[in-house]
Length: 161
Image 1 (cartoon, helix red, strand yellow):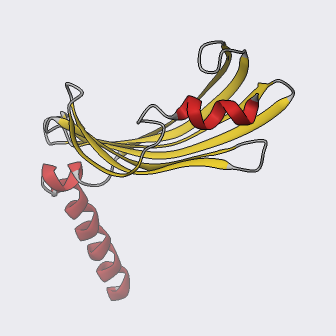
Image 2: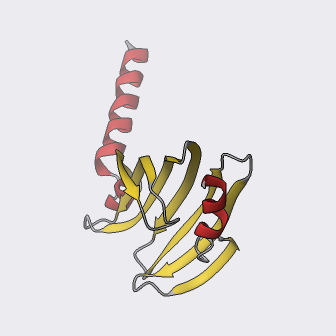
Image 3: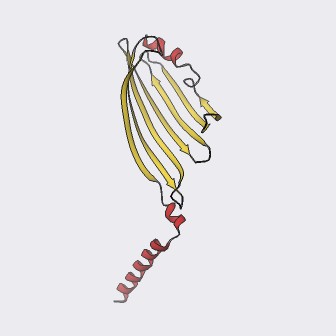
């Protein structure tokens, strides 16, 4: 009987600790997690001057943390974007892995890598970290960004011609 009483007392104390813990501890239990998928297809007639048939898919997870008042404190988005491009009987595939952090303090931080495998055996690759203000101003940039530098057509189109 004594063992059972100690067990019940221990269970009661454990449960009461959960009920009366401060709101900040409850808010910090972890993020609200949601998952998403999206995809589609389109024809790009502008990049290379000939039609490129693009099929893409994006899968991601959004983690949201809230403060004691239920206001969004920060969020993190993890995503994988993949595409298959077809033109002139040739196929290229690309994969982008990206993490977005929004700490609700005026800027986003993007980190990730992007690689495109071209039909001639070459590839285009980009990786790094980019911090951007909500108004679009670049605050800091680290890594290679040939696509962001406007060189996609120069690197992509000859291999697909």
